[in-house]
Image (cartoon, rainbow, N blue to C red; front, side, top):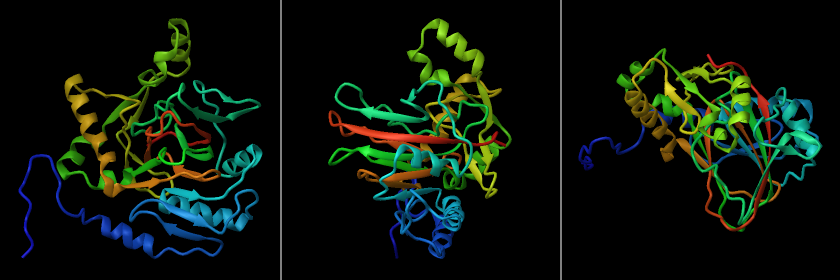
Length: 301
């Protein structure tokens, strides 16, 4: 008879059995125009046999199906020009200009993250990009330009599974509730008082459902993150802080995650509505240069 772990407060032991159905579903998928090699049981696949510089329409249509199934897709050996990077991302929707991160010279939608000994990586917290917008992003296409020999991986967490794994009483507690997301949580600190007020007028705090619905798959998604979620609406501040912290811990569960080790010309394309990501900042003082193009999504519901 298998030993039963001692019931330690707040800890989970053993398998999360509900993940088996998701793993079985992904294991059955097949594609005509490329191969998908899963990198973790419930999230993420490396796509082989497709050239993102000039994919045919049928392959792009099938790739979209893979995107919604795996939530994050990875590609190797994609030597894209900036124009090709933009063209690939634009297939999935209108592209976003970021108001606080400068675009690449001549290419406003391309954000370059250039890190070295002097400009350190600070994206090492679980988050969903631009959740402070009234209309957050659909997803992002991130391309590796220069990477360290070791380190600098990016981790992704499946927030659909994170919601599924919540205790029933916690699901009931957050059902129908909203939370306010605010750019001041991160980008406000680097602005002057005058610029902060101008930005606040243009980008007021946005209230989104704590549990949003995926517009394509219909799945429920846990939609709070430590960087941009400021408070649970109509809740005592202390209780709000406790609840946000409790919910955000779900992204840290390894069973919900996939980790990607970058190589030059690798590409990641993730569904920003359904996953959180974390850029490991373990490579300092080495250089790491990445370029990101983000696709505008829809208002969360």
